[in-house]
Image (cartoon, rainbow, N blue to C red; front, side):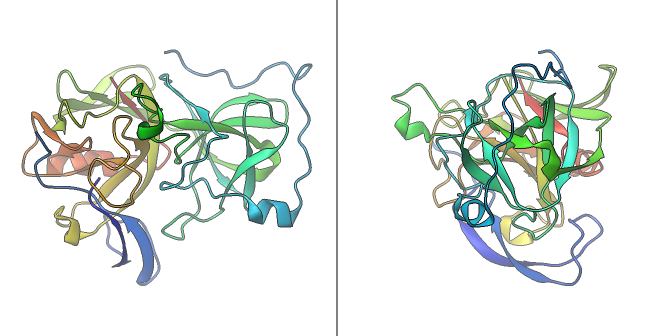
Length: 291
């Protein structure tokens, strides 16, 4: 990701997210310049020890911080492992998010995302009236981690009643920083497509050992990616607060670049036009694992 968040007008194109007409929205910027010198989840669990869902008033819900890409919310749970299966939901309305204790809400999901489209929610495990979901916000900044690095991905509990199931993805994305490649892998574990990729440098690495998801996509030629849709993930840099400068939260994106090999980026993954098209064909909510 790049230097700042700006207000941009994103029009409808066949490759971009479907938006009726043109709408002014805040979109994160991706960087194009050179950088500076497990097992699948369980869908249900015994409800015997599962806490009930507390009531959250509309006023209390509205006062909670929104778990969006630029937010840092300490009550979220770090998610530092890989998974191979998920269920994709949308929200019936704004929904509270809870931490590990599930006693008080720590944040909220907005029903519409930064492109004013239905928010994509990725669920990993069902426990009674709760769903464990991934979020696009940070739990901690790397600068506050004492040199240990911050979690690249976060999770939270959301009431099942807030969710509307959309789909179960049949493929996932696997990024190998060692092989400098991006693969599309079927539910059976078969690699169906594989592409070369440019990844982060040693100083601004692409985070590894973690799974996030495709959060949103949009076309913005001003970012140097031409007419190729930028594929925004829920992952963040674990090494630097803003490795690209600005206020975009150190997001990790998959995007077009003329250089598609080597350790060359600020953490994002650089792809050819063919690779971007293949990723763009996958639904939002598709898991993205970095090895």
